Structure formats: C-alpha cells, structure tokens
Image 1 (cartoon, rainbow, N blue to C red):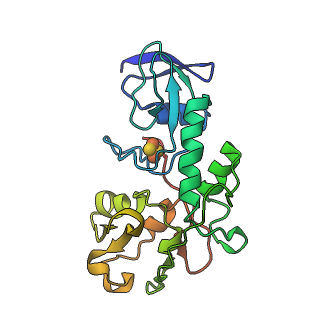
Image 2: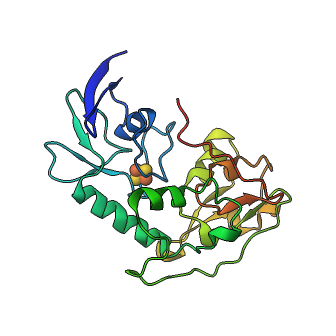
Length: 225
Ligand code: FES
C-alpha cells in the first residue's frame, strides 16, 4: 500500500495514497463538518457543501470529501475563506430545519448540534429568514417516524437502503426547496417495500428519522473502511 505524508492543521500525518482528506482528518482526530459523505462511496455527491478546507497552493477552498491526499499536501481546516463558505452553507441549511432540540429524541447524536458547536454558529440564525416547509410527518411504519421537515437531504438513508440493503425504495423527489426524500410513488412508508430494519434511522444525522420507542439512534456513518 502506497502512503503519502501530509500536514493537516499543522499535524504531520501519514495516509493511504488516494484517500480523501475528510477521512484522513477524521481518522486522525481532526473534525471537519460533513453530512453527505459516506466512506464506502467512491464518487461522493458533495452536496452538503460543509466540508470545505484550504489546501496550500490552491486559490479556492476544496471539498474534503472529494479531494484526495497527496504527498507534501498542507491542509488548513480553519482557513477564513473555507470557514466563511461552511458557515454560510450551514446557516442556509438550518434556516429550514425546525429547531426544537429539547423535544428531539436525536439530540444526543445530532450532527447539526455538533457542527453548530464546531463552527460557533447559533441554531437560530438572525442573518437569514426562517423557511419552514410544513410537510406532513409519516408515522405509518411500526418501527420509526419520518419527519421530512427535519431532513437535510444528505442522502445517507437512500444509500443505505439501496446500496447496503439492496431495497432501494426511497429516493429524492422534486427539485429546489420542494426536494424531499420520498418512497416510490410518495406512498406512506408502511405501504412501501420497507423491510423495517431501521438502518436508515441509524444513519440519519439530523433527527428526520427516529425510532418510535424513543431510543436514540446510534450514528453509523463515517465508519472505518
Ligand atoms: S461532506 Fe463534503 S460536501 Fe458534504
């Protein structure tokens, strides 16, 4: 296995050649906000735009989930250009996310809370107008509830259902602000081919999917390959 030497936030690191900056940083205890990245996916969607970092020699920040490490690379996860992009992206995202942490069963595993703390960004932003979606909550499954209003469109549940479990009965529907994760034909989950395994709940980073028994899901993404 070919390895490369690089520096992330002044920490000298050895990593597998070709590995993405995001996974190398996380494996070495350096947190980079991320929602849509899945380690097993070789061509990341890079849709959440929260993992921007600065790389010496590059004019603009790059997404850490798509950029591979290289020999001698110098990465700064706290550069001002990158942080500005990440903070703005995060504020846009939470402007349409209902903030009711006290009553959210996922509060102990919520990635949004973790990212907000890391970025020192308030969950209720004054800079942007709140835009709530007012979508119906689907509680038809005997196992879990799906609240699309809390969904951050990371695509983890779609991936785990399709690629990991081979079912694939959920996907993205509509465009722009109306974009949601929905079952085929937008049927209630109980009428879909859902196997009731609950894997989608364990990968949801934002409490959009949660177990009816109130058990907090144990986060499963970002696992080591
Ligand atoms: S984790 Fe890189 S764009 Fe979402």
